[in-house]
Image (cartoon, rainbow, N blue to C red; front, side):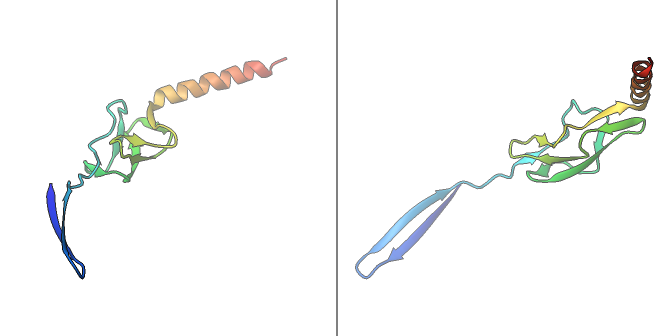
Length: 108
């Protein structure tokens, strides 16, 4: 910590004040959430609170959710919608199932 001695002189007296301050440690995020597998960023960690990162998925995966995340004061990341990576095969398979179900629902 730092100790600052301040002197204040009035017309009649000299006042001395002591003020102790602690150094402010920067809040940092040290890496992506381990649950965000296949999610990548070009950022170098650690990053300061308030830093906005752009994320993407590894090859063969599709990004679902936000492509930006923000380092918070709590040393975690937040976003409008939690990003996740879906394997392209699973994504197209689910789209085919939805399309097949839609066709069945419209038959009379």
